Length: 76
Image (cartoon, rainbow, N blue to C red):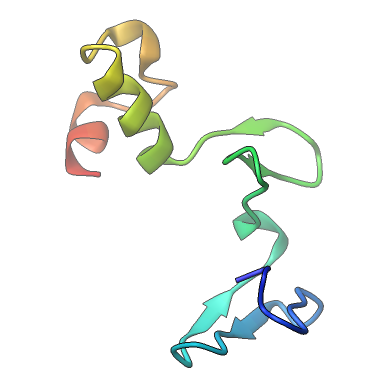
């Protein structure tokens, strides 16, 4: 969405110019080019979907669960 002309996060939501979907673009939902979500406090957060991709790509190794349960990772 951020590649759309006029894209802004100032109102906390953005209406997609392609499909018309209204999206929550508040600070907690901003995903940077590196694929990570960066909160204002600059703590490291990894979405369950990204964590599940990494976990699966490492053979479902428990060292790559990033604090999520196996059930959460399987469901995502």
